Length: 275
Image (cartoon, rainbow, N blue to C red; front, side):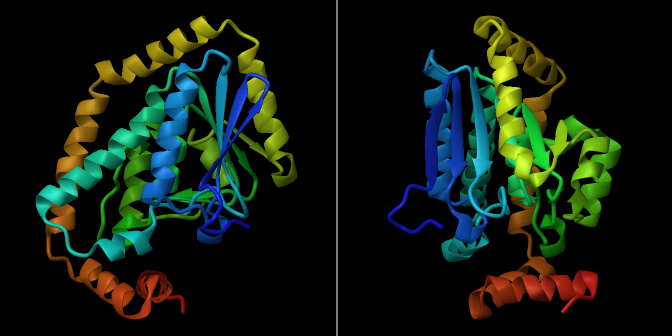
């Protein structure tokens, strides 16, 4: 368990492997400004540290990451188009820092990996996940867009559309493996060891060649228009967020009046018949 006196990100070195642990377990490692900034800083530092060959990103507690912190979003209140663009573009830049880190970054995922958490996992180069992991984007169910549109570049346009249009956020680990969302699925109690073993396997290779190979693979996306597509998504997301949509307005009203849990219960009752 963590509290306000503990760092939101734990950093440890295991030989040539730097392991970063998101440390907001009580919030299911939801991404707030402090955590995102800490991840960005740690990734930049690892990228320039010659002693580091591979980075692992994992979450403390029972989940990897439940997405962006909606409580923090609610506290920010109403934003105009300029503020939304700054916020969304900033979120994309922070995800790209992981993709652009010279060192390979491996996500080690257990339980919930949702919305912004799925973005975070997709920004990593590889993903080793526990058999209890669950993925997806629920954003459309409360009238929001996806911040970092990595999904179609990883699983293809057809599957991405299906997941995004339905708001499915219960994709199980075996299905995530089948569609190419993740690399390996292991039993929950073997997750740390399996992720570390993969990192060590990579670290045995010549670091310069590994780094140049990562850059070459990433460049294939860039040549195909990856960054232009992310920028276009940001512009369209601003339109979504600044349009008066009854579903989103009601979600935000309930969040402000009764709290986030009540808003999520309303959403699930409306779209899934739960509650």
